Amino acid sequence: MNPSQRLSLHIPEPPARPGEEPDYSAMRIPPAGGLERPPVDAAATALHGYADALIRVLDDSGAACGEWAPQIDPQTLRDGLRAMMLTRIFDDRMLRMQRQGKTSFYVKSTGEEAVAVAQAFALDDGDMLFPSYRQQGLLIARGHSLVDMMCQVFNNTRDRLKGRQLPIMYSVREKGFFSISGNLGTQYPQAVGWAMASAMKGDTRIAASWVGEGTTAEPDFHHALTFASVYQAPVVLNVVNNQYAISSFQGFAGGERATFAARAIGYGIPGMRVDGNDFLAVYAVTRWAAERARRNCGPTLIELFTYRADAHSTSDDPTAYRPSSEGARWPLGDPIERLKQHLVGLGQWSEAQHTGLAAELDAKVKADLKEAESYGTLSTPPDSPRSMFEDVFKDVPPHLVRQRQEMGY
Image (cartoon, rainbow, N blue to C red):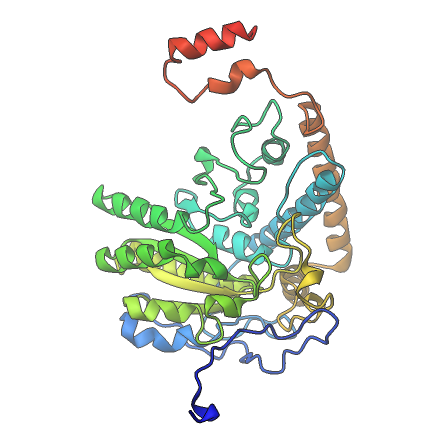
């Protein structure tokens, strides 16, 4: 056999390894404002180009450009900036709590705040959210109590889930925030099913769901797209492409061959690829997809092109698989700084206001943390075993009651 005819496999390689210089020279970043905003009822076949493009609104100077630039009043933009800043400060404080042994686990969303916050602002309050574990900004943008979130992270006596979920796997029914699952991908078909039920009942609410790019390799992702396409479910399906799963880069999920938005094409669903660090672009595309769903034009798959600036979780060490300077050199910048720059350019914000707000939010997080800690932390004696079977059975079986009594509870 001629050696040149031997078969071989391609093994994906990240753009740079630890100790190497990050290289983004091959990344195609189109100018802001260069894409048309299509009608929300456009046929999916007419939108194929958007799956391989990158929708951007904010240019390098912070100015909003093009047809996708949404009409958002300055106060709403300031509210968005506040929610992103609060999310980051909350994350930083809770990481410290994990390092101090007050909780066992935490997941930060550093660098991805625009994904959750801008999308929360673009969706209606009644819409149902099926998040993954890096969308705490959805709850914060919807005004949920930080104390309640902290108590869940601490699994203390005020934990609404009573210690039956891992820290950060929130579940807040009154905010339309479905229980986070550690089994990645499950929320996609659940969101599609909820959206189908909403349509069957003649409701007006839509669903939205989030997964990371690594999860697109899971069967649940494809099951969801099949049902969403066949039944034209009113759902917005988001893929947060932050370049890395817990320890492998996006090439192992197929990102070298095509964009993740392009996976929608085979299902007859619009695939829209957006700069995930551009608050205005994320808001505009999500609003477009939500309006499309409300008009019974079917689902949309959105790829949010961003970068995970911190570790995957407190169980991860990113320096083992990527250069430590890679995040700082990410060409699409920091979502908080970019929205801040935009507001400054509008004459609606200043460095002094920004510094003051950061101090105000830091004080708020500290005060809320003090209250949450008063209800207990990981280092606090656990709640009575008497509560073990509460909310599990409607009527606790007699044999479990006897066992509990034998133990003195």
